[in-house]
Image 1 (cartoon, rainbow, N blue to C red):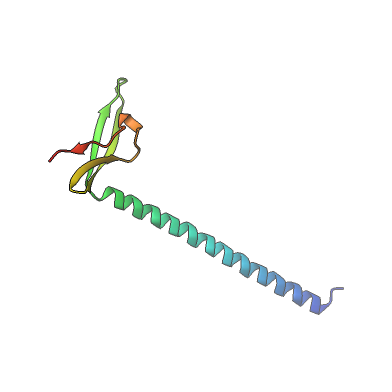
Image 2 (image 1 turned 90 degrees about the vertical axis):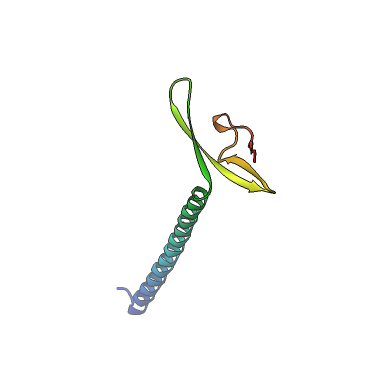
Length: 97
């Protein structure tokens, strides 16, 4: 027959383990939530400025979109794409004034 003191210790250890697990899960949820908030803020910031959407058609007739951002640097305006080299854009052309 188990001793009442042993049973009480086992229950205390079990409660401490559950508290630790809840603490760890809350920490992980906070980290994932923070990551998602940062991703949304990054997306909003990148799409809220001077954005130009260029629609092109491939030889096969498929439409594609490329987002270009107008960047002002040292008195000149430049076009910047999200992924250089994709959709045939290899350089950032300067916009003449």
